[in-house]
Amino acid sequence: MEEKPRVLTIFNIVTATLLSIATWMVFFYAPLEAVMGEVQRVFYFHVASAWVGMLGFMVAAFAGVALLRTKDLKWDNVGLASVEISVVFLLIAIITGSIWARPIWNTWWTWDPRLTTTTIMELIYAAYLMLRSGIDDPERRARFGAVYAIIGFISVPLTFLSIRIFRTIHPVVIGSGDPSSEGGFDMTSTMLQTFLFSLFVFSVVYVNLLWHRIRLGRLANQVEQLRMKLMQ
Amino acid sequence: MTEPLPVTSRQESQPAPSGMEYTGAGSRAARGRTSAYLRAIWAVVWKDIAAELRSRELVSAMLVFSLLVILIFNFALDLDPGTRASVTSGVLWTTFAFAGTLGLNRSMAMEKDRGCMDGLLLAPVDRSAIYFGKAIGNLIFMFTVEAIVLPVYSVLYNTNLFKPGLLLVILLGSIGYVAVGTLLASMTVQTRTRDVLLPILLFPVVIPLLIAAVKGSAGFLEGGDMEQTRAMLNLLIVYDVIFIAISFMVFDFVVEE
Image (cartoon, rainbow over all chains, first blue to last red; front, side, top):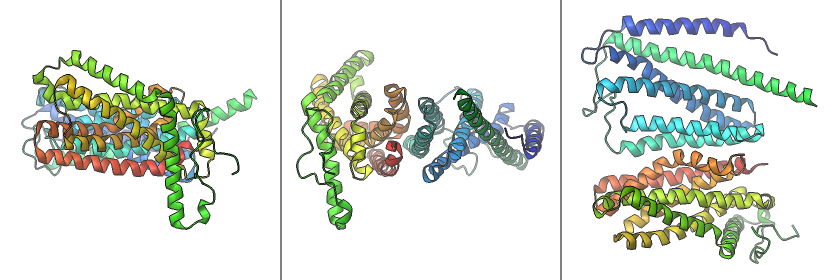
């Protein structure tokens, strides 16, 4: 059994500290938004979780390509770890979005391109996890997982495009220009700082969790091997 | 290779048509290789058609299922003339998508159950030829079902569905659907949950295709915004090209033993 690396322990402490600072910034550093009020504060972590969700799926697709090219099962571990983390973060993004949308759009849900695409993404990766659970042979599970991660990742922008052709009401805060969106706002410099810092912190949280999950996958493999040895 | 290749799906099926010379493809010139590749694809398509002509189990199952779905929609949506115009394209594509999974499952399960897939994989041809053969076979079955469902729907609901634009959307939509479906079906038959898994894997991935197909069909049926309809057609073409290319690249990894 491998020991828990010392660097990882330090990394855990750093991540926890950064996350606390980000939380403090969201509540006390960033100013109150004039029109929407307190509920706007959900925005910082909402966008950051959605970003981590997207990032994780991209990593999973690249891990899939790497697996098919190298046939090295460590990439399967990376892909699975990434998808599992992203499924959770995407769910956080959907839920925080709903909390924000209720007072601002006056509905929990609307079939806007981003919302729909996010949901379909979540479903694709739920299917990914189901596909994996249906295969016993680890080598085949890795190959099929990789193929599906690639296909799923490529279909996501097409889904977005196909719905985008109709109109959208989701606000585009960064580089906006669409006047028909509802609930948009201009960021002050402290808001922007909080926002960028949240993005950064959530990326760090993602890397931290990925590290833990990959380590867990490796340990699970070792346990499996030990079990096989014992059974023989 | 001296023995006849086990490319038939059923014992009673005839062996591949004569002139199926796979061996020595590598030693010929590029043109010879291309024609050998095309002949390999055709051999797979032909054995699927021959098996289907004898048993008729795949198309008939898809067809009866499609008609049942349309019947259920009739009661579920109360298809009176007013609502009918706006929901026709949705009903059609839902029917095709559901019936499609039935056919894809069956077509791949047939290969797996009788060990025919192993026979196909032993053949000294490029693996992608098997993929294209199966995909074209599935596409032919899908077209057959659509060719019957469309006139039946037209008669039952007194609407004319034979518009060139709509047929084009159905052509492009079916190609994309079958391209992804064949790849995913060859994956799901190798899993424990099999038939249950195919729609769960397939539907979220074909959603862009279905959206484009539904909106495109509606555009041609109702004569709506032509610019949007054309955008949908472009999206269908893009989807087809991307997913045929990807399936071509990854099919090797899916059937690898």
